[in-house]
Image 1: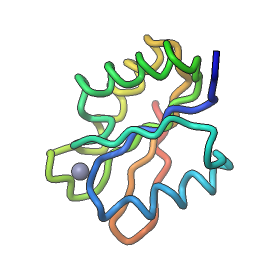
Image 2 (image 1 turned 90 degrees about the horizontal axis):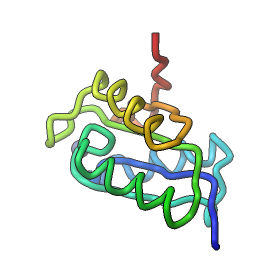
Image 3 (image 1 turned 120 degrees about the horizontal axis):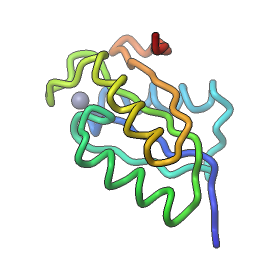
Length: 113
Ligand SMILES: [Zn+2]
């Protein structure tokens, strides 16, 4: 079995892709060691989130989930959606980390209460 450590979930929006790459570098998640999945809404898109985290776990035995949504998302995702996403990730066997991506190229790590 070929395995990887992380599943990375983000929105498809072109405006955040460079920031996502910078975030992964900051987290020391190395290129070539993670499943990267992008779709509209990112971690707020529950249906896609479940499908892709499930596949990442099943196919690659990943255990860390980097979950993100972003500012001004056309799919309507908001920061608070990350909490439900975290519950979903845990239910699928992941340890989640939550990030709100901003359009100015920065991000905020979102902590659960
Ligand atoms: Zn978006």
